[in-house]
Image (tube, rainbow, N blue to C red; front, side, top):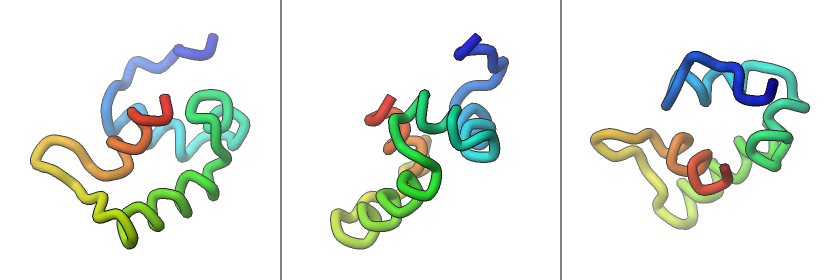
Length: 65
């Protein structure tokens, strides 16, 4: 099953990014290294940053999901 995680939020994203690249691509539509590069570019060029409740990588994952 695709959605077999008991985690949510940052825990879920950490599980996705630490897992197999195919799972990341299936869930977020990007390979892990592409996700990390996109995150880095958005932080540098567009000012994407952590908020009180969401880390920048979670914000990007929500957008892509």
